[in-house]
Image 1 (tube, helix red, strand yellow):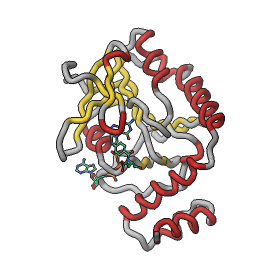
Image 2: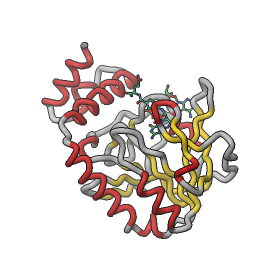
Image 3: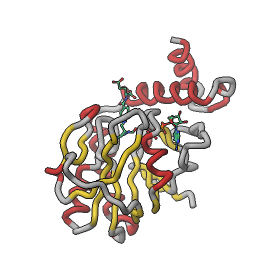
Length: 213
Ligand SMILES: Nc1nc2c(c(=O)[nH]1)N(C=O)[C@@H](CNc1ccc(C(=O)N[C@@H](CCC(=O)O)C(=O)O)cc1)CN2
Ligand SMILES: Nc1ncnc2c1ncn2[C@@H]1O[C@H](COP(=O)(O)OP(=O)(O)OP(=O)(O)O)[C@@H](O)[C@H]1O
């Protein structure tokens, strides 16, 4: 309840981090996840659809997508930038495409699995599509382009996920350009970053592209 109230005050202050300075990192992150939920409530299906289409257009025309031979991408769940068309286009273009598969257990680890068709994906935890168990995991974790989901992101490479650390652990070992896909209404001034948080190389929204390195 307290954090819900803080989020409301934070909203009315226009997203500055100053109000949160006395809270510890985890609580700040949890409050931002609540803020993201609040912001999503104000978005219509039409706005979501339009923003998704604009992000797809920007990404699919970009040199870093066109030139990438090996792509890693999340398979989107509700509320995230939709990656289905991106994955289908990459497969049609003959690119090598890997998507994540969670390894069962408390370690919160993911592996990259190469797919050749969307039919190779089946719903797993939270309804997220993942490669079937029979498909081998990739031994090569070097990607020309990795598309990373977020709950919120900032314009300095900061990224907030669901708090399980799956992506931070994965990105510690993978290589290549890390591009976060984010709707502009989920941007925040400064996401609190911990030692284990891996910064993004670039950010794409329906309004702009930001490169950080
Ligand atoms: N598309 C996608 N795949 C992904 C992730 C992701 O963020 N996006 N993950 C990145 O970690 C991992 C899955 N982990 C997840 C952890 C929590 C929630 C989630 O929606 N949590 C809800 C609470 C759900 C509940 O209580 O039932 C929430 O945060 O509101 C989703 C994915 C691996 N695959
Ligand atoms: N490489 C790592 N090794 C050990 N612990 C880690 C690592 N990365 C993250 N963690 C831990 O995992 C927990 C969740 O981290 P955090 O809140 O930053 O996740 P997130 O970035 O929101 O989620 P995700 O990475 O799944 O999108 C934290 O307790 C963090 O310390």
